Image 1 (tube, rainbow, N blue to C red):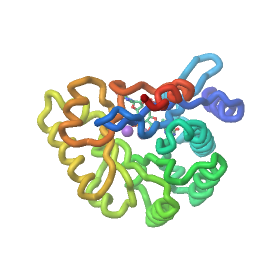
Image 2: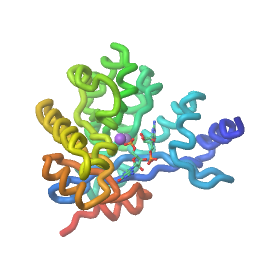
Image 3: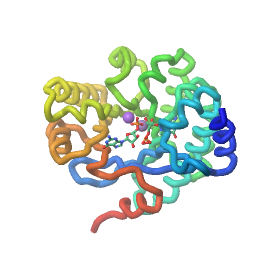
Amino acid sequence: AELIADLRRAVDEKQLYLEYQPIVDLATGTVRSAEALVRWRHPRLGPLTPARFLPLAEETGLILPIDRWVIHEACRAAGAWRERAPEATVAVNISAAHLRRPDLIATVTGATAGAGLAPRALTLELTESALIEGSDAVLERLGQLRELGIRIAIDDFGTGYSSLSYLHRIPATELKIDRSFVARLGDDARAYATVEMVTRLAGAFDLAVVAEGVETEAQHAAVTAIGCVHGQGWRYGRPVALAELLTALTPAE
Ligand code: G
Ligand code: G
Ligand code: MN
Ligand code: NA
Protein backbone atom coordinates (compact mmCIF):
# COMPACT_ATOMS: atom_id res chain seq x y z
CA ALA A 1 0.00 0.00 0.00
CA GLU A 2 2.85 2.31 0.82
CA LEU A 3 4.43 1.40 -2.48
CA ILE A 4 1.27 2.56 -4.28
CA ALA A 5 1.57 6.05 -2.80
CA ASP A 6 5.26 6.02 -3.70
CA LEU A 7 4.49 4.99 -7.26
CA ARG A 8 1.91 7.71 -7.65
CA ARG A 9 4.54 10.22 -6.60
CA ALA A 10 7.20 8.61 -8.79
CA VAL A 11 5.38 9.56 -11.97
CA ASP A 12 5.04 13.20 -10.91
CA GLU A 13 8.47 13.54 -9.41
CA LYS A 14 10.41 12.12 -12.33
CA GLN A 15 11.77 9.08 -10.48
CA LEU A 16 11.17 6.88 -13.51
CA TYR A 17 13.82 6.57 -16.17
CA LEU A 18 14.42 4.53 -19.28
CA GLU A 19 17.16 2.21 -20.36
CA TYR A 20 17.61 1.22 -23.98
CA GLN A 21 18.61 -2.20 -25.21
CA PRO A 22 19.98 -2.46 -28.75
CA ILE A 23 18.36 -4.67 -31.37
CA VAL A 24 20.95 -5.51 -33.99
CA ASP A 25 21.17 -6.77 -37.53
CA LEU A 26 22.64 -10.26 -37.02
CA ALA A 27 24.65 -10.19 -40.23
CA THR A 28 26.41 -6.86 -39.66
CA GLY A 29 26.02 -6.08 -35.96
CA THR A 30 24.52 -2.70 -36.84
CA VAL A 31 22.06 -1.38 -34.28
CA ARG A 32 18.66 -1.25 -35.98
CA SER A 33 16.48 -0.36 -33.06
CA ALA A 34 16.43 -0.03 -29.29
CA GLU A 35 13.82 -1.23 -26.84
CA ALA A 36 12.96 1.24 -24.10
CA LEU A 37 12.69 -0.43 -20.67
CA VAL A 38 11.34 1.48 -17.70
CA ARG A 39 13.06 1.59 -14.29
CA TRP A 40 12.19 3.31 -11.04
CA ARG A 41 14.79 5.07 -8.96
CA HIS A 42 13.03 4.60 -5.64
CA PRO A 43 14.13 7.17 -3.05
CA ARG A 44 14.68 4.51 -0.35
CA LEU A 45 14.81 1.16 -2.13
CA GLY A 46 17.09 2.20 -4.98
CA PRO A 47 16.61 1.17 -8.62
CA LEU A 48 13.63 -1.15 -9.14
CA THR A 49 13.01 -3.28 -12.22
CA PRO A 50 9.59 -3.48 -13.91
CA ALA A 51 8.86 -6.83 -12.27
CA ARG A 52 8.85 -5.06 -8.89
CA PHE A 53 6.35 -2.34 -9.75
CA LEU A 54 4.53 -2.94 -13.04
CA PRO A 55 2.08 -5.49 -11.59
CA LEU A 56 1.15 -2.88 -8.97
CA ALA A 57 0.94 -0.20 -11.65
CA GLU A 58 -1.43 -2.42 -13.61
CA GLU A 59 -3.67 -3.12 -10.63
CA THR A 60 -4.00 0.55 -9.77
CA GLY A 61 -4.29 2.00 -13.27
CA LEU A 62 -1.05 3.92 -12.75
CA ILE A 63 0.24 2.00 -15.74
CA LEU A 64 -1.54 4.49 -18.01
CA PRO A 65 0.37 7.61 -16.98
CA ILE A 66 3.55 5.50 -16.84
CA ASP A 67 3.05 4.15 -20.36
CA ARG A 68 2.30 7.65 -21.62
CA TRP A 69 5.43 9.02 -20.07
CA VAL A 70 7.46 6.13 -21.55
CA ILE A 71 6.10 6.75 -25.04
CA HIS A 72 6.94 10.45 -24.92
CA GLU A 73 10.36 9.94 -23.38
CA ALA A 74 11.28 7.17 -25.85
CA CYS A 75 10.24 9.29 -28.82
CA ARG A 76 12.29 12.18 -27.51
CA ALA A 77 15.29 9.84 -27.25
CA ALA A 78 14.80 8.58 -30.80
CA GLY A 79 14.68 12.20 -31.89
CA ALA A 80 18.08 12.62 -30.24
CA TRP A 81 19.70 9.72 -32.09
CA ARG A 82 18.12 10.46 -35.46
CA GLU A 83 21.19 12.31 -36.73
CA ARG A 84 23.54 9.43 -35.96
CA ALA A 85 21.26 6.66 -37.06
CA PRO A 86 18.40 8.01 -39.17
CA GLU A 87 16.92 4.57 -39.73
CA ALA A 88 17.09 3.32 -36.15
CA THR A 89 13.67 2.89 -34.58
CA VAL A 90 12.61 2.89 -30.95
CA ALA A 91 10.40 0.20 -29.41
CA VAL A 92 8.13 0.63 -26.38
CA ASN A 93 6.11 -1.94 -24.46
CA ILE A 94 2.39 -1.26 -24.33
CA SER A 95 0.25 -2.69 -21.56
CA ALA A 96 -3.06 -4.46 -22.16
CA ALA A 97 -4.91 -1.67 -20.36
CA HIS A 98 -3.46 0.90 -22.70
CA LEU A 99 -4.39 -1.13 -25.75
CA ARG A 100 -8.03 -0.96 -24.67
CA ARG A 101 -7.96 2.86 -24.64
CA PRO A 102 -9.13 4.77 -27.70
CA ASP A 103 -6.78 7.63 -26.77
CA LEU A 104 -3.74 5.40 -27.42
CA ILE A 105 -3.73 6.72 -30.98
CA ALA A 106 -3.67 10.36 -29.87
CA THR A 107 -0.92 9.61 -27.34
CA VAL A 108 1.25 7.90 -29.93
CA THR A 109 0.76 10.42 -32.72
CA GLY A 110 1.26 13.28 -30.27
CA ALA A 111 4.54 11.79 -29.09
CA THR A 112 5.98 11.11 -32.55
CA ALA A 113 4.92 14.48 -33.93
CA GLY A 114 6.18 16.28 -30.82
CA ALA A 115 9.60 14.67 -31.21
CA GLY A 116 9.70 15.29 -34.96
CA LEU A 117 9.74 11.55 -35.60
CA ALA A 118 8.21 9.73 -38.54
CA PRO A 119 5.58 7.25 -37.32
CA ARG A 120 7.60 4.39 -38.80
CA ALA A 121 10.40 5.19 -36.31
CA LEU A 122 8.22 3.90 -33.46
CA THR A 123 7.42 0.26 -32.72
CA LEU A 124 4.75 -0.72 -30.20
CA GLU A 125 5.50 -4.06 -28.53
CA LEU A 126 2.38 -5.98 -27.57
CA THR A 127 2.34 -9.29 -25.77
CA GLU A 128 0.25 -12.18 -26.96
CA SER A 129 -1.74 -12.09 -23.73
CA ALA A 130 -2.61 -8.42 -24.22
CA LEU A 131 -3.66 -9.15 -27.79
CA ILE A 132 -5.72 -12.18 -26.89
CA GLU A 133 -7.97 -10.06 -24.67
CA GLY A 134 -8.33 -7.77 -27.64
CA SER A 135 -11.79 -6.92 -28.83
CA ASP A 136 -12.68 -5.91 -32.37
CA ALA A 137 -12.16 -2.33 -31.24
CA VAL A 138 -8.56 -3.17 -30.35
CA LEU A 139 -7.97 -4.76 -33.74
CA GLU A 140 -9.44 -1.74 -35.43
CA ARG A 141 -7.20 0.54 -33.38
CA LEU A 142 -4.13 -1.48 -34.34
CA GLY A 143 -5.21 -1.21 -37.98
CA GLN A 144 -5.39 2.56 -37.65
CA LEU A 145 -1.98 2.74 -36.01
CA ARG A 146 -0.57 0.58 -38.78
CA GLU A 147 -2.12 2.83 -41.42
CA LEU A 148 -0.45 5.80 -39.77
CA GLY A 149 2.85 3.96 -40.22
CA ILE A 150 3.47 2.90 -36.61
CA ARG A 151 5.19 -0.49 -36.39
CA ILE A 152 3.65 -3.28 -34.33
CA ALA A 153 5.66 -6.11 -32.78
CA ILE A 154 4.28 -9.19 -31.10
CA ASP A 155 6.48 -9.59 -28.03
CA ASP A 156 7.41 -12.86 -26.31
CA PHE A 157 6.04 -14.69 -29.33
CA GLY A 158 5.30 -18.35 -28.73
CA THR A 159 4.46 -18.07 -25.05
CA GLY A 160 0.80 -17.03 -25.31
CA TYR A 161 -2.23 -18.77 -26.73
CA SER A 162 -3.53 -19.19 -30.26
CA SER A 163 -0.63 -17.36 -31.84
CA LEU A 164 -1.48 -18.75 -35.24
CA SER A 165 -5.09 -17.70 -35.60
CA TYR A 166 -4.55 -14.12 -34.62
CA LEU A 167 -1.45 -13.75 -36.75
CA HIS A 168 -3.95 -13.56 -39.56
CA ARG A 169 -5.82 -10.73 -37.90
CA ILE A 170 -3.22 -8.58 -36.16
CA PRO A 171 -1.59 -6.06 -38.52
CA ALA A 172 1.88 -6.82 -37.09
CA THR A 173 5.17 -5.83 -38.66
CA GLU A 174 7.40 -8.09 -36.59
CA LEU A 175 7.61 -11.07 -34.27
CA LYS A 176 9.93 -11.24 -31.28
CA ILE A 177 10.81 -14.84 -30.49
CA ASP A 178 10.63 -15.32 -26.75
CA ARG A 179 13.94 -15.75 -25.02
CA SER A 180 12.87 -18.98 -23.33
CA PHE A 181 13.27 -20.71 -26.73
CA VAL A 182 16.59 -19.05 -27.47
CA ALA A 183 17.89 -20.07 -24.04
CA ARG A 184 17.26 -23.75 -24.81
CA LEU A 185 18.57 -23.74 -28.40
CA GLY A 186 21.73 -25.65 -27.59
CA ASP A 187 20.29 -28.66 -25.82
CA ASP A 188 16.66 -28.92 -26.81
CA ALA A 189 15.79 -29.99 -30.35
CA ARG A 190 12.22 -28.86 -29.85
CA ALA A 191 13.31 -25.34 -28.92
CA TYR A 192 15.48 -25.28 -32.05
CA ALA A 193 12.53 -26.44 -34.17
CA THR A 194 10.34 -23.76 -32.59
CA VAL A 195 12.76 -20.95 -33.46
CA GLU A 196 13.06 -22.36 -36.99
CA MET A 197 9.32 -22.57 -37.37
CA VAL A 198 8.63 -19.06 -36.09
CA THR A 199 11.33 -17.67 -38.39
CA ARG A 200 9.77 -19.44 -41.39
CA LEU A 201 6.34 -18.27 -40.34
CA ALA A 202 7.54 -14.68 -40.06
CA GLY A 203 8.99 -14.93 -43.55
CA ALA A 204 5.74 -16.26 -44.96
CA PHE A 205 3.80 -13.43 -43.34
CA ASP A 206 6.38 -10.89 -44.49
CA LEU A 207 7.20 -9.96 -40.90
CA ALA A 208 10.55 -9.01 -39.47
CA VAL A 209 11.80 -11.41 -36.81
CA VAL A 210 13.86 -10.68 -33.69
CA ALA A 211 15.51 -13.41 -31.62
CA GLU A 212 15.34 -12.25 -28.00
CA GLY A 213 17.64 -13.07 -25.13
CA VAL A 214 20.71 -14.01 -27.18
CA GLU A 215 23.44 -14.34 -24.57
CA THR A 216 26.13 -16.61 -26.00
CA GLU A 217 28.19 -17.05 -29.15
CA ALA A 218 26.54 -20.43 -29.70
CA GLN A 219 23.07 -18.91 -29.51
CA HIS A 220 24.15 -16.13 -31.87
CA ALA A 221 25.47 -18.69 -34.35
CA ALA A 222 22.30 -20.76 -34.09
CA VAL A 223 19.80 -17.95 -34.63
CA THR A 224 21.90 -16.64 -37.51
CA ALA A 225 22.04 -20.10 -39.13
CA ILE A 226 18.30 -20.46 -38.71
CA GLY A 227 17.82 -17.24 -40.63
CA CYS A 228 16.65 -14.77 -38.02
CA VAL A 229 17.46 -11.28 -39.23
CA HIS A 230 17.58 -9.37 -35.96
CA GLY A 231 18.80 -10.18 -32.48
CA GLN A 232 18.53 -8.73 -29.00
CA GLY A 233 20.27 -9.84 -25.85
CA TRP A 234 23.36 -9.55 -23.70
CA ARG A 235 25.52 -10.86 -26.57
CA TYR A 236 24.88 -7.51 -28.31
CA GLY A 237 24.27 -5.24 -25.35
CA ARG A 238 22.49 -4.89 -22.05
CA PRO A 239 19.89 -2.19 -21.42
CA VAL A 240 21.87 1.05 -20.98
CA ALA A 241 21.33 4.76 -20.45
CA LEU A 242 20.62 6.86 -23.52
CA ALA A 243 24.11 8.40 -23.53
CA GLU A 244 25.68 4.97 -23.75
CA LEU A 245 23.32 3.86 -26.49
CA LEU A 246 24.24 6.96 -28.50
CA THR A 247 27.85 5.76 -28.47
CA ALA A 248 26.78 2.37 -29.80
CA LEU A 249 24.78 4.09 -32.53
CA THR A 250 27.78 5.93 -33.88
CA PRO A 251 28.36 4.29 -37.26
CA ALA A 252 31.66 2.43 -37.56
CA GLU A 253 33.79 3.70 -40.45
O1 G B 1 14.45 -5.63 -18.40
P1 G B 1 13.21 -5.94 -17.95
O2 G B 1 13.27 -6.37 -16.51
O3 G B 1 13.28 -4.42 -17.98
O4 G B 1 11.67 -5.90 -18.36
C1 G B 1 10.75 -6.74 -17.78
C2 G B 1 9.39 -6.64 -18.42
O5 G B 1 8.78 -5.39 -18.18
C3 G B 1 9.43 -6.83 -19.93
O6 G B 1 8.73 -8.00 -20.22
C4 G B 1 8.72 -5.64 -20.50
O7 G B 1 7.72 -6.08 -21.41
C5 G B 1 8.11 -4.93 -19.32
N1 G B 1 8.32 -3.50 -19.48
C6 G B 1 9.51 -2.87 -19.47
N2 G B 1 9.35 -1.55 -19.67
C7 G B 1 8.01 -1.34 -19.82
C8 G B 1 7.20 -0.19 -20.05
O8 G B 1 7.68 0.93 -20.21
N3 G B 1 5.84 -0.35 -20.14
C9 G B 1 5.27 -1.58 -20.01
N4 G B 1 3.93 -1.65 -20.11
N5 G B 1 6.00 -2.70 -19.80
C10 G B 1 7.35 -2.58 -19.70
O1 G C 1 9.48 -9.16 -22.19
P1 G C 1 10.33 -8.18 -22.90
O2 G C 1 10.99 -8.83 -24.05
O3 G C 1 9.67 -6.91 -23.28
O4 G C 1 11.47 -7.69 -21.91
C1 G C 1 12.78 -7.79 -22.16
C2 G C 1 13.38 -8.35 -20.90
O5 G C 1 14.40 -9.27 -21.21
C3 G C 1 14.00 -7.30 -20.03
O6 G C 1 13.76 -7.68 -18.71
C4 G C 1 15.48 -7.43 -20.35
O7 G C 1 16.31 -6.96 -19.32
C5 G C 1 15.57 -8.92 -20.52
N1 G C 1 16.71 -9.35 -21.33
C6 G C 1 17.20 -8.71 -22.41
N2 G C 1 18.24 -9.40 -22.94
C7 G C 1 18.39 -10.50 -22.18
C8 G C 1 19.29 -11.61 -22.24
O8 G C 1 20.15 -11.73 -23.11
N3 G C 1 19.14 -12.56 -21.29
C9 G C 1 18.19 -12.49 -20.30
N4 G C 1 18.13 -13.44 -19.41
N5 G C 1 17.32 -11.44 -20.23
C10 G C 1 17.42 -10.47 -21.16
MN1 MN D 1 9.51 -6.13 -25.06
NA1 NA E 1 9.96 -10.11 -25.13
